Image 1 (cartoon, rainbow, N blue to C red):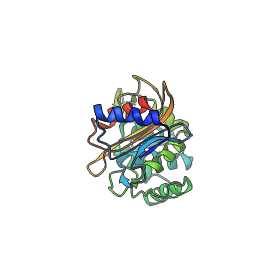
Image 2: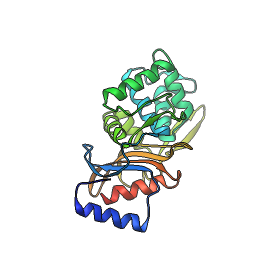
Image 3: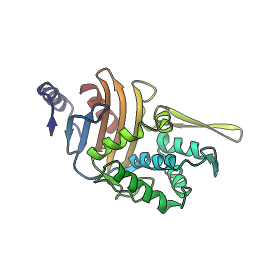
Image 4: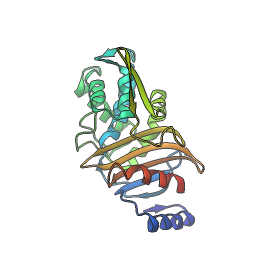
Length: 236
């Protein structure tokens, strides 16, 4: 466990005594990625749908037509669904329609991870359903900082719901992070869960203490990841 200041360590001690964290790995940093407090951030773990942040980045890097229809939705709508609803079909469609197809998409994801100096990160698909989509807390801090530079990802991360018109009716898809739209200013947010990963979330948000990046990996469930992330964001 790393700690920069004694008051932070004492504060963390008080938190864990009253509400123990279930996350196996976590970190809180400032906007530049300087770690205030962390646990097991060098440990490789499955990251589930946090993968979709990288999928979205490489799709945007490819500079494809965002208004092109892919099935029922535009590429832009699919990206919103992947970030907000964490929709696996949307992520699959984005990767399948990447230049060269799915394999080229995954190759681009792994190449970008290397470019971002994320040596302990590897992707096998664009959804995060594969247990071998793996990373570390340390690497994911870098991924969040990179995602912040994409205005489309930031806009999607700030949406409490996506509304898409299909024929004559509007469909609403709620964000898997229920805090969004209720409190804090978010810049990046992506949740994840498969059995191998446990509850996961990465986010960059503005708090009363300043802008913070929070990474939670291996939380007990989808119900514990958000409260634990918010608790850390408010305390460091």
